[in-house]
Length: 337
Image 1: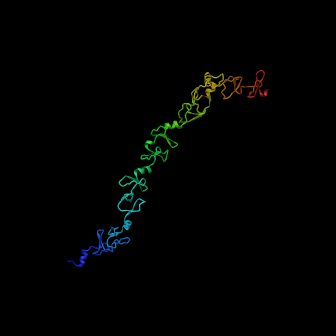
Image 2: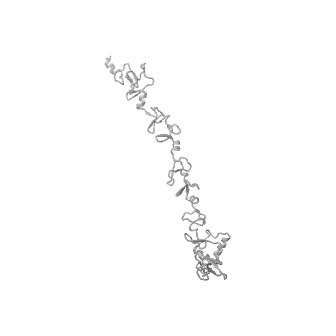
Image 3: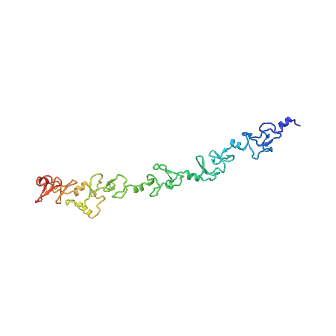
């Protein structure tokens, strides 16, 4: 036999809430409770129905305390990482420092389930690898497709290319070394020179260095030369080969002029330096018989004269451009008329 005191102390289980014997109590959560003690620890709602049995909605037991489902979720469960879901997560997925229901852990773009899949994230949102690549990877400037391997250039900041797309716009060769950016298109050095540099009027090749602009064209400095002596003209004076030359011109000057009359090309360009022009094309003065090196002279009776040598036959002063020829075919200046 056991006395009532020992019976209650050693045989009857104690209430998990009040620590008193529960001879007529309930067993829940692996422990015993008085019916009156089985209430939610947070909101004090009874967890026993009118028939003295547990509510069908049950309850949760944690840390020797009983909680209704609502209070248990509020106190111990995390909110779902999906902002469109308002349910707490009991058993789910832990990712991106958040808890997720299995069905809620999906791609933010295509909504594909991501449980057990490789995924990427952006601003704490999960994405499948395909959607992350299409949405956030830089687009190739050439083909507009997403780049996984990226080439960038300081010549075009903010632009990216696939390694295979980083090619010349003209010849499509992969660019290595120097290249040029024109209107946001890439060109290798060779194609850039052919497409954008001025062409020499003599050799038709691109001009990369200094450009000589003359005679309605552009020229390499070595190509802009005298057709007689082949010396570069540079910035010096020059003369185009005339179609009509004085009778005192050299044979090669006469031949060059005759070729010009026939429409033939003597040289490109058809020019002579000042030295060759003076020695081969300059006329002999009809007054002093010396070569006329000045750029202009006076012509009378099919003869060339220095301006100072074309004189009045009365006063011996320069006759100028206004003169008179008397009956004896003498040149008379205006003052002596």
